[in-house]
Length: 191
Image 1 (cartoon, rainbow, N blue to C red):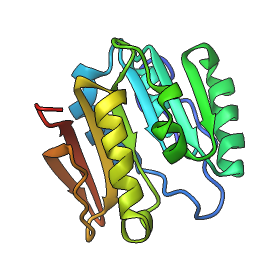
Image 2: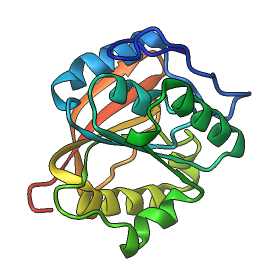
Image 3: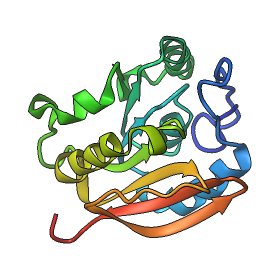
């Protein structure tokens, strides 16, 4: 695992241990970031189910001003924090350990206007779509209402065989790479 472009280009990241996380391949990451390039400079990023932080750290490397990482797995948190430290970007990063569903549901964690994320990477374990769809729908509702800026985008990564609508977000674009699907979601205009 490595940073593909920007300030930290070529720097290696600690990979995940075991099969708890599914790292995205460099080819897919490059394709995704080619699409996101205009949105990243000066952006605020949320990297949900961050694992080792590859998506948020790639965003910081390409000019995002801040990334918030959400991770519950202890091993993932250790590697995430080490990756942030190795790249020397702790002043641009915030790590939220534990239950992100609870964090997003709390009114105490709502950002002020102008401090919402413009890109949210939503990469839950694939089993969540089948085992906890209502939790993901509630998470999407909280994101859309309070945490995503009006023109922001959510990148929802999941198994290509699965589908889950996340109102009030709607699909703007879809890309498939092997057995993985990336859905580009935006807020409904009325939200």
